[in-house]
Length: 234
Image (tube, rainbow, N blue to C red; front, side, top):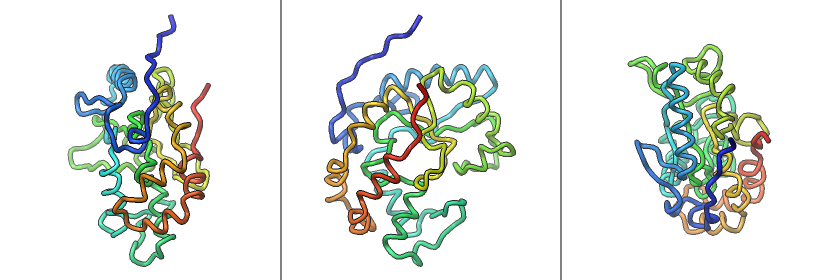
């Protein structure tokens, strides 16, 4: 029997840009839209039966948190990585180049899919050694990485629980993120509603490093780094 899906009112500008959390719920340390939360718990239980401890590194993230992550990368306080995952020196990059470097692995505040309460970053806690620190880099999810079994399991099972990976293909924007899952039903309508003017208004009054460079290039950023993602399977 096909499960019925809950109908939710469209998210407004504040929810779309992470400036409100009225659309999400928090339980057991995971904050998502209610339907996404329920489907993730179902998937987590199924993974457990396969010996995988499916855990969340990040779920809903608000605007202020995204600003903090961005600014830490802008000022070199958090690793800034190139397309191959190699460290870069933020201080040596001109503003526009630094903005584009950050965008390879982090969305600008107001544009993160984590704002929507539909997306989350996952890992297998059972596969981590006690002395091993989670990095969320592609090598961890590759065939020789600690989360190889998780990758295989997700490839075979995530769709039946309503999830997919929006960052699988390198389209010249955001780099592939095998840890990033999106709840298809929760994200579908939201992704259509986040428009350039909404994002520009959210950024205009923010205390963001490189804000002028980001706003000057926002149409290209919106097209290349925000809209250019993999589509869910039919």
